[in-house]
Image (cartoon, rainbow, N blue to C red):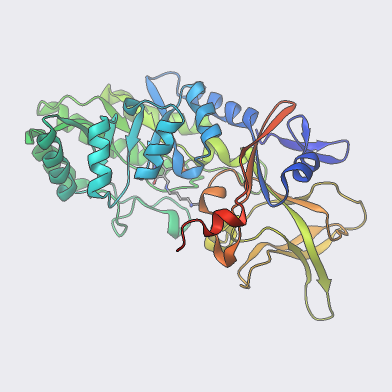
Length: 413
Ligand code: LLP
């Protein structure tokens, strides 16, 4: 499902040699495979087909408008985590009812905008937020569609920075307080409670905790039904992981088998909010070798024109991404440190990797970078955000231009 593979000894994205793209678009550049996104979406949709469901793509993973438009055409909804992501969803053609607005610490402006638009649901993170939304909606003479995010205190086995379902994290309302708040919300004239929400974390490879969270949320939904609150949906968040080391990750069928039994008991429509699963494997970050060095007593360094500014995951989460030569020269592979050009030792994309005898100017691809890659890129060291390219079969297009130096200084006085 990656969309990338070697053809005639050269890395290609679908039908297009990656080297052709890199020559035309400059490096570093993000390259995405439309076919891979389609395949991932179809597999998840198929796995959940036994129950009414909606797949709301988590824009935080990748909000390139061209990818969003593709996902919308496939039938996805949107999961937006900020005012900017709501605007991105609208620009990509999602209608407000197709947008779920999630996120801790939503500002007054963001809530005003979401209520004015009439988004499908605002996922409420606290009692205070419920009151603020109620006041905004009453001020407008409307009822805002809301869901309550419960924190189930379940730790999935993933990196601490991206684990959100534990009691010690800032997310949601503790599950044992959720029923009480839901009752209060049902009494607020500006709120129309339509669902329940949970999100355990990201890059989850063991689906069992996702099933346990579904069970707890289903219990809450049944309790609500028993005291007369008719909800519409149960939103189980995102989190399904991908196999960054290659091989097989958790299958969508395992995922469906873990969550669907609990959802069925509620009779409610299922919403899921996958980000990574839909786009991670569809993207690669392509850079060029800018320098190499090997001195006695030091590792062999392969220094790219791409680094932590383009892909911060290795530095931030010690994340592993496979790194391959785009046009391998052949010859023995030896261990090297694949690093970026930034002024930090942590600017390492790959530690102790086996690469062939690469030379300055050679192209290298960092795989599975379609999720949380470009969206977390920065201008550190006054570097320009890279271009993004979408490949579809034999065709490809720059869907976001690389920043110019002019862009870098545009907002300064
Ligand atoms: N829904 C909510 C409420 C979320 O907070 C997230 C991700 C998702 C859905 C989508 O999760 P996914 O299916 O992509 O796992 N920057 C980190 C990942 C942060 C995820 C934050 N929340 C990384 O690069 O691994």
